Length: 279
Image 1 (cartoon, rainbow, N blue to C red):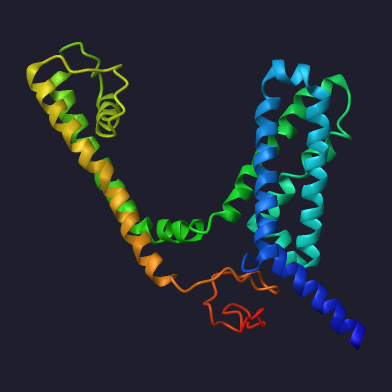
Image 2 (image 1 turned 90 degrees about the vertical axis):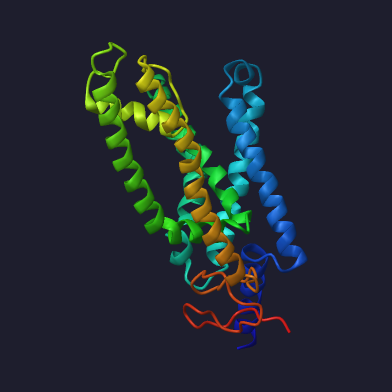
């Protein structure tokens, strides 16, 4: 009985260090892992520069193996530190962690000159490590919640913009259709209206008649206001989430990996498991 309690305490302590950031050890772990992820991204970028890769191929290979082994250790520790390993293995971050680790091991089995192209494609999976950075951005969860909450409003707004683009494109086709300026059909004119409304302005199509240029000027001015609308919608939702989550800490449930618990929470809001409550 005593041995079982000791093992549980060890697993809980490991979970607290790896999944939370409320302790000095947890913060240190996150900082080291952040530096490691950034370093691995730099390695991916340098490996894509052919001159550098040819000159420092051995260094890149050793560094890549070092990073891969460290990520493998981290992956294993995350699995053994929770009560239900499959909750992490099949989670978003679990899949990303696995995808960012396996390419180097796969390179041991993909051999032969005919497989070099496939090997390079597999090595590109290492770029998934950049997605691990989201774990360290405390605001990312609130941003994702804000985007989800904004979806209905943004969808209605985009639909309205699409209808407006069809109307403006049709008008421009009627005005510029016979001028030889490139408005040869309504779909092509709608494409021009979308490009102009978004202030991209490729310049492949441009009105030449005075009335067409006047309409184009109006659309350009409208474009500045239209771009600001989705930003305002998301900002309003983000502010709401900021107020809702003001008393949330970094505790993660060791049973189901749920996060976003209040500071005084003793039990997980998702599964009811006991949290590492601090007096």
